[in-house]
Structures are given as C-alpha cells and as structure tokens.
Length: 259
Image (cartoon, rainbow, N blue to C red):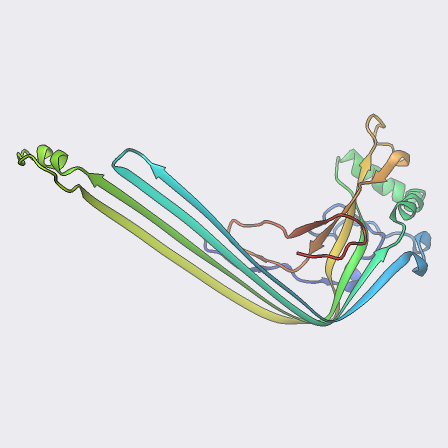
C-alpha cells in the first residue's frame, strides 16, 4: 500500500479564470477554457460582497473497517482511518457572482467563436460548465495536515480438545478453555505544511453545468443551464489512494457557501 503523500491543490492565480468563462474541467478550469467577449456582461451584472477577517476551517475524518470470518476458528480485521485538516485565514474575502446567468449564457452562445468552441466540445462528448461565481482571498495564510492510521489484526482460535486429539493426547472430560493466538499491526503517518499566498488569488469557483433538451440533437440554440450550482474549492489535502474532491452543492445561485 503506498505511503500517503500530501499534494497541494493551490489557490488559482487571479488571471487563470474569470466570470463567464466556459470550461471543461472543474478540477483544472484554466485548461482549454473559453474566454468570453468583454461585452457579454457589464459591471452591473456582477454582485460583489466583501468579508473581512475571513477564516475557513475544515476537519474531516473517514474510517473504514473490514471484518472477515473464514471459519468459526479464524477471524481477521482491517481498519483505515484518514484525517485531513485545512485552516485558512485571510484579511479579505471577495465573492463575485453573475446576476443573470441565463441571459449572459444566451449572449455568449450568439458569438461565432463560442459556438465553434461549444460544437467542438459536443463532438467530443465533453461536459461544459459556465463560471458564474468566484471567491478570492488576499494574502491568505494556509495550513494543511493529513494523517493516516492503518490497523490489521488476525486471530486463530482452536478448541483444546481438538488440539489435543491432533497430537494424540487424550484429555479428561470437563470444561476446558480454548487456545487462541493473534497478531496485530499498526501504522500511522502524519504530514503538515503551511504557506502564505501573497496578493489576491482564487479560493473557490462556482459553476453551472450546461444541459441540452432531450431529442434536440445537442443543438446549441436549445442549450440551457442546469438548476442549482456547484462550488469547487481549490485548497485541499490529498494523499495515497484518496482523491475525493471537496465539492459543495448549493440550492441557488446566491446561497452563501457553507461546508
């Protein structure tokens, strides 16, 4: 089993992404994204909120256990415990969200360059997402930690009478204790890292997925945005075989993010 290694999913540079972008990969939104025309929306279409002395703390513990009973005399057990901690502090958090995402999406779809980009994604059967919100942090201090504990044990229990019979020894009748033997193994790895992200950088991105009406032949003119949205956080600890993303589903486009 590989040793857990802390892999940082860093904050995104401010110029890596923007409102109104079309992207194929929420986990890496700057790759192969489409930059919208500046006239697609104006400052009045953007809702902006400033939060001072911002902090975000996320502690997560996952435990998995496995028990096996090969027979009445043989038993084994295995447990895996993963703990991840993220602590973020920033003097300023700015949230920017598009006010009329459906209308803005319609304007983008009228652009020839956007239509060509969407048609290429459709031919490749790729999912497309519209960036409708951004959260940025200024001079953020971030610390991340991850620990993993593995425990395995096995036990063999043999009735005394059966063991004696196998060795040719005759025991007197009566209550006798069973004979058992066990083996256990425990391993724990801990790793922590901290850093400062100077300037303003992207902490989270809000998406709405583009969907097509049934039997429409995936016509761009009949495309629309799915209800609800998704926030993707770009600071998380990953390690070993655990590669789960931290994704938060919101009920509406303007609901404040809560882990």
